[in-house]
Length: 114
Length: 112
Image (tube, rainbow over all chains, first blue to last red; front, side, top):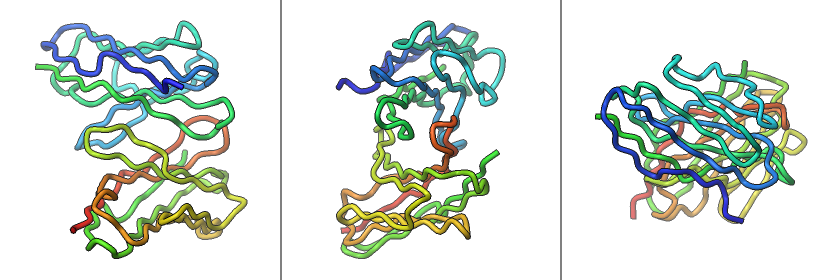
């Protein structure tokens, strides 16, 4: 089992640029979560999907953030335009299969916006 | 919605001592309570979980207790070792219903 896969692992970009983060959940999992982690705000849930459908996006900070899940094996989180305050570690997690309650986290993407 | 409070925010113990981290939750419907350990620069990983139909669960040096009436649950680590140093998160959710609500984390430091 490869676990949750995220790419890129590190991203450095300049303010105003578009950033796309990618996630492949564990095969057979039907829920996917995007989190942002910073020292100041801790671990924040941005959005989650059940069966590819967005269920709760109340954590998405503003319209600059958008997330999609076109199929069960792929999701993207896009920031356009990016700002320095978006610098954080972004985690994707998935849940489902035989462990219907446990969330399994990916390795994260460390985003730095200059 | 659910609200989870976690205490203390930082905890420093001597190697070999015990460590206890406590969480309270607000939604009586919550019935699943996982604990995650996050080492520096790594992802959060599940270390133990408990469901509301049991009061205690143990796995080697780690145990979790749950008091449904008081709506709080605790993580107990015995015989702490330096490799236990990490940030620990508690969470609460209703089975397969949606999102988990995480506590703010406890930074545990075990001094050799």
